[in-house]
Length: 357
Ligand code: ASP
Image (cartoon, rainbow, N blue to C red; front, side, top):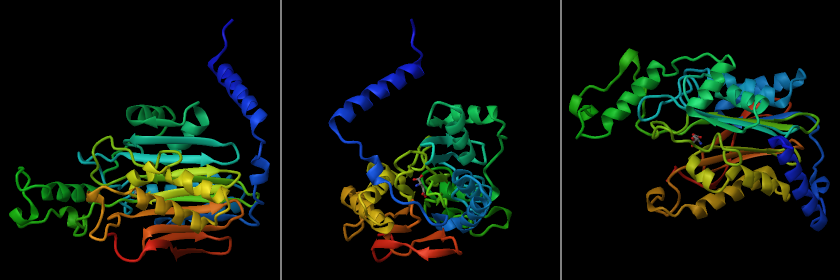
């Protein structure tokens, strides 16, 4: 008599749980914090509008995950934001590849997509992965096929502005290839009247948004076009559960922006949530995880003259009581919050004063 895979997984999980229960007291109840007295929404600095939309929806009775996804959709569809969705800066081949993840506290659900091409709302595809599959992460062609099956429209996500930035980046790479550098051509590539397409730095940029509703239920989303001009197929922290996003309904949520490789190597967002579980306030929890990143950064190419990371990472955290905060390695970072009364941009805490190395 066959057992279905699901039945097998269920019985295996039950068996393990039984084993553990006989040895370790079950403590989850004692970790549970009281719920928030009113909803709170936290986002990266580019998410002020996202916090407003999410708050409006939560007040209207929407589920917190629906609300934060609707919030970040505003940025995914914004051609002026070159770090996310439509208008995002492309990879080294000029192709926009998107990463996103969602986590739903009440159902302990998670979904994600990585290296997704041609779909404007990767966060919605991640939501569909969570809701309609037995999986957590779909990538590349498979993710796109899945999105098309669910009715998402395929479109060219590369705006003229992002394409111009990519052409400028490619031209500046080397004097030994056949694309003239700006110095050689004497003529910067400025198509379509754009003069500010690329500022010469390879930007990171992402939107993270998390919310707790008045019942203390927490959800979050992180969505990005990732590192500008990345190696095709490169996946950052944003779609990786525990790295660019982590939610535990007993504790709270965390998301990250900045150098994804650094976050991935310390399971950054999970580390922040675990810090909060042990009682740290959100901002302290973020600063502690950033300290771990700094200690783990040993490669010379990633250090400035003072031996400090020459990149930035931001964490954004909130707990189920609605306490919230954000921190970065370097000063000058900001975050968006709707604290139930008003939405505003605030300064993030930081480890080091100065530029990014
Ligand atoms: N963390 C994202 C990544 O590494 C990028 C960013 O936040 O800017 O893909």
